[in-house]
Image 1 (cartoon, protein in one colour):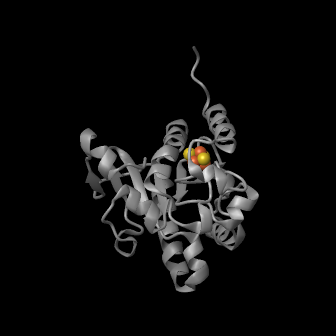
Image 2 (cartoon, protein in one colour):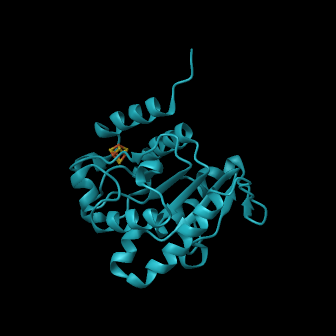
Image 3 (tube, rainbow, N blue to C red):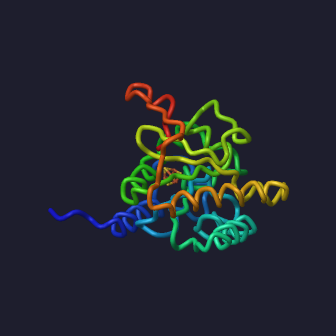
Length: 212
Ligand code: SF4
């Protein structure tokens, strides 16, 4: 059987997410938000959960945070069509509460399939919740902009563009982190020497790294 192309896989996942009823969040959503962007992107941005605007549109990173995201990409000569953007859970939780562990665990299957299809060079976690799914004790103010390789996959935590809406002083921080990411990705060597490398044992993966 021939390999299925990334685009086809991503489209299939999106179709499944849009009608998914695997967890309770099916009841609080207006529209599921599978993700948006290039199916062979080198960079995938992963936020926590859809917000009011994303839920309304069925698209990730819209509203004011979306405008900021576009500006940050544009500053590095990128368009959101060239990257992939999604969330850990694909449906908005009621009153924007944090997704429950069971909801996260259930929805994880889609993110894992997206990562498998896209095979990005770098996964960018957006915000504290997304970072903590990856590294439970990590603090965003210490970890943002630092590349970490975990079990062979490269990650870099960022502040969520939404946080700039409430705290404009974070904008230059985010700009600097974007610059760092793009400088690395456009360097043909893509050297990872000097990056923090973490190996998580298979039996600990569920506990420590239940995302990704
Ligand atoms: S949050 Fe994920 S698992 Fe739950 S209903 Fe939505 S798509 Fe399905």
